[in-house]
Image 1 (cartoon, rainbow, N blue to C red):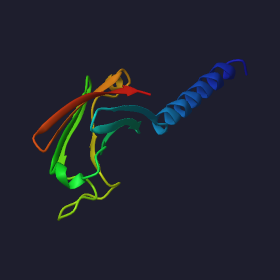
Image 2: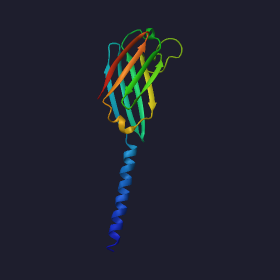
Image 3: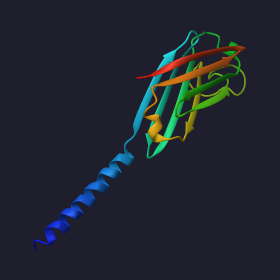
Length: 141
């Protein structure tokens, strides 16, 4: 009977270890960053879900005439990677207007090193529109 106790203890520890590992895999970690410049406000979110890094960057134009911006190119840069995209602002007139809140531009992506994203403190944003360029920093919230 005394030989059975160590075996039972080992089985209990194995089951406990698998349970903790499964909970860590299912839980997600979300990091958010916010900031603004003269013409833009921005947000960047990094979520680690089931071992996959999901990134989303959103810009909102502060001006009233969103059609005057034309196509908007933006990049969200971190020490662990980044996103870049070009499109018209959501809600702009004409064809191919993206869906979303009026005056916004969204970039999304997957991938990257999970361990590096948890150490990111700032996100550098560069926006190009209508012959203008503006850069600003998003800070971790």
